[in-house]
Each structure stands twice: as C-alpha cells, then as structure tokens.
Image 1: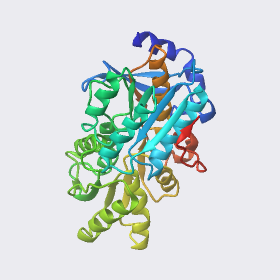
Image 2: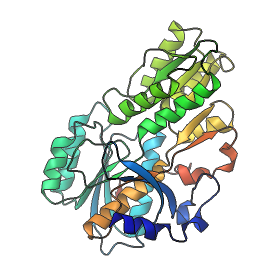
Image 3: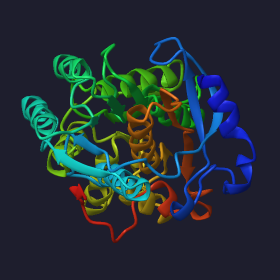
Image 4: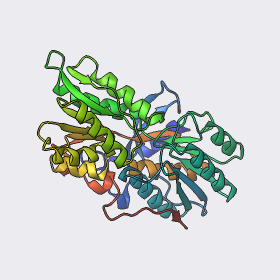
Length: 359
C-alpha cells in the first residue's frame, strides 16, 4: 500500500518545487521533497526519495491533540506554525500544549492524558524523552487513538506514524561540514560541542552523528556540554567553555546555542577568532548565516514536519493510505546559498506568534 502511495505522490510533483532545496511556498507547500523509510520505524530501514502530497481536505472536523516539549525557542514555534496552518487547511481542530522544557516529562505525560480525557481523536507528540513516553503511548494506542511521533523520536512499537528526520543525519551534516575544512593531518582544532538536553532521543542521535562525522579529522571535540535549549542555559554553557578554553576555534551545537554564541562572541570581540555552526536551523540561525555571523546549519524543514504529522493523523483517522515514516529532505544552509532560499518555506514567518488552539 505504501509503495503505491509513494508512486502516486511522485507523479507530476516536480513542477511545484523550488530550486535546489526542494522547497514549496507555504501557500501551496506541496508536493515536498521527502525521504521515506522502509520498513517503517526500523533502525536499519532503507530510505528512498518521494514527493509528499497531503489530503485536500478532512472528511470531518477531527479533534487532534498536539504536545510539544516547550515553545521557548523559534524551532518549536516553526513546528507550531506548520501544525496550525495544516489543521486550518484540512479543516480539523487542534489543541496544542507545551510542557515548559525538557526536564518536565511528567508534565508532558499529564498533558497528553488530559487531552485524551477531553476527547482527542488523535495525538501528535514531540517527545521530551524517546524512552519515557512508552507508557502513555501504549495507553493512548490501546484506546484506538492514533499516535504520531513528530520531530524528536519515540521508542515505542505503539506509535502509528512518524513525521521526522533523523537527527543522526543532522548532527552528521554539521560535523561533516567542519571536518571537510579540517581534514586529517591539519593542525589540531578545538570545537566546543553543545548537543542539547541530556537523555533526549534527538540529542543522542545528533551527538552520535556529529562524533562519527568528525572521526579521523583534525578536529578536537571538547567534552560535550549538555543542557536545556533555553537561551539562558545555553549562554552559560558557552561562557564556561570559552572561559576554560581560550584557544577554542568553533562553537557547534543546537540552534539556541548558535544564537546565544553570536552575542557572547561579539561582546568578547571574538567573532573573528571563533566561528559558529548549528546542527539545525532557526530564524536566528538563518539570519546569522545571512549576516555572516554563523557559518552554517542543516535545514530539516520543521514547518513541513508539523504539517505532515497533521496530515498523517487525518489519514489514519479516515482509514486512508498513509506513509508511516517520512521526513523532509535535509540540506545544508551556509553563506553561499542562504540568500537563494525562501525563508518562509523552511521557517515560521517572522510575524508568527504561538497559537495553542485551532477551532
């Protein structure tokens, strides 16, 4: 069934794509260049390219609950934008909740339980913990309520579908970008590495990818500094690394790390001495790349991940064909191509504010 769907999706798709990034305008965001994993959810699954096309409209106003770890940074604001716009386009209702941070697993679980008790017919989860959501996912799935894993990854056989990229590839892309600049045999070059909150599945995956990409290069990766993706936490971690390692050449890490590092380096007059690489894109990172303050970051099109998750939920509710494991094609953004990419296609518009309900 999935193969037939993939073939149907690909027909005539390329006419709506923009340039090398495969990005479609938000007003008509599809078809969108994506990677499909077969078999779904398999750690060793094989990926193939397809052009994702969502449903035109839902058959009824389904009630969908969407749970985020937080909305403290522009990354999750972008996911919110995708979820909200797709819910509106399809004509379904959405209740969006956020737990306040990666230390609040119990709160996220409680919020999901509350959503279900209020009549949610499908649940989309951006998980705080890949392993910590197993119990609530099992309980929700037992009620015949579809559970869609968006962005972060959930280790549970009870998930119905996944709309995400592999953060291993995101981390690998950032590490590879730096490794190519410092191949084996070159002068040892120190990198401060900030993967994000310890224990989160996406952080572990990104860390593994980054470390494998830099293996054998001249890069010397300092001890990873883990922490919540709030600006205050990341700023303190960056300050500590700069204080302890005056010869560090790069700051590499989360989008929040990269944004925080820009101001810190400028205040210390170190912008020319220390360069910055993120392993995912945010509006601040994108602007930093355009202005030459950040070197590069891979784009995972978080807006599209949010859109696809809502489409998957509706397809599952309506018993329609669904690609169960899919994510946008990752591509690097640096100073060479930043001005050729449509910003609003991969990030929320600059004027967008958090929305918690679509009626």
